[in-house]
Image 1 (cartoon, rainbow, N blue to C red):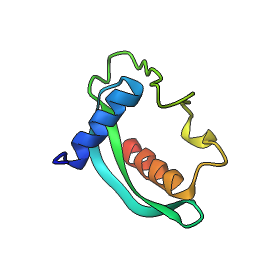
Image 2 (spheres, rainbow, N blue to C red):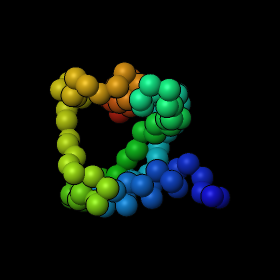
Image 3 (cartoon, rainbow, N blue to C red):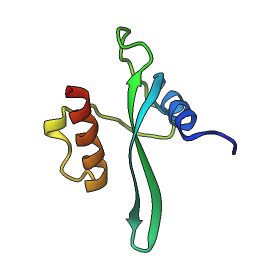
Image 4 (tube, one colour):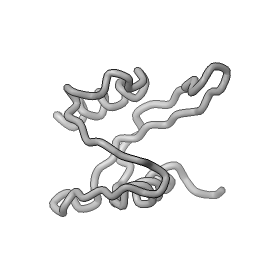
Length: 96
């Protein structure tokens, strides 16, 4: 409670991956059906590393079993369309 969305994104990256980011731009918001009849509100941000010249060394938290880093052109097939659209929007913005 009382935490703005950008601060929440920053905190979650730190807690779950051990990396420090800044939420640079709101990309999208939508409802996602996780399982039939159960929806969650998704908010996606384009983020940048606080120290873009420092090492990118994410670490796995206790909340997950694994993570992956993928080139935009080879995202996993099962990635939901909303996430895919947000990644494509941010990728396009970063090329400008």
